[in-house]
Image: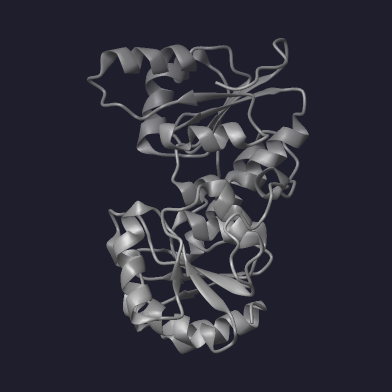
Length: 314
């Protein structure tokens, strides 16, 4: 789908379907592959919802879309088989799911090609990574394939003109959403409103961000707190990255944009409840932290303020 360069060099297939947070947790792994195999063709197999993001990244030479169709969708299954039967130097499975295990067993195993992942019978099985963060898991896979470790350079995401909305400084960003399938990951609107009032006492304006599905909770926060301002459903990922990069700090739930803020390097605090394993899913960044309580609503705004002091955001 994007530029295609060297045609007679090593060809690697990298599998990462999602979700958004995991896509960004993998940036160091992608950077490590790109810099270590600078003349190789790197192809990403991912979901259609992340195709535009993948095309924006400087790591991959082509993108294959896989929306994980049901196995009875024979045209799609045959299409996937054709991809896996290409002459890959190696397949690097960063998803390690039941779906990718199926692809290995159905389409790739008989080729005898290299496969780095967790599926039984693959040529290069990864070690037990049960207690390893998702970022480190993906880095382990690419290093097993021969890559050296590099830190991701995010200039491709933050190089554009900043302040597209003319936000009043100093400001912070609040991310009150999460996957619609997991509303239990969300800290309450009341708590975010109380936090917004406390933040405003420091002279910092809290801006609420999110997608269209977060409009109701943003309205509730801004009704309960006159300090909070909503720019929900007004940004794409690149614009959101610009907003993060100029913020004093970012506070959010376990959701993709919180990982983006952490990786950019702004002081970022993730609030976690029973649905999140902090060992696996804590954000990584130069000033990233988290607060975990099994009942996420038991986290108090005062604790968030204290933690943000520790992270250097206040």
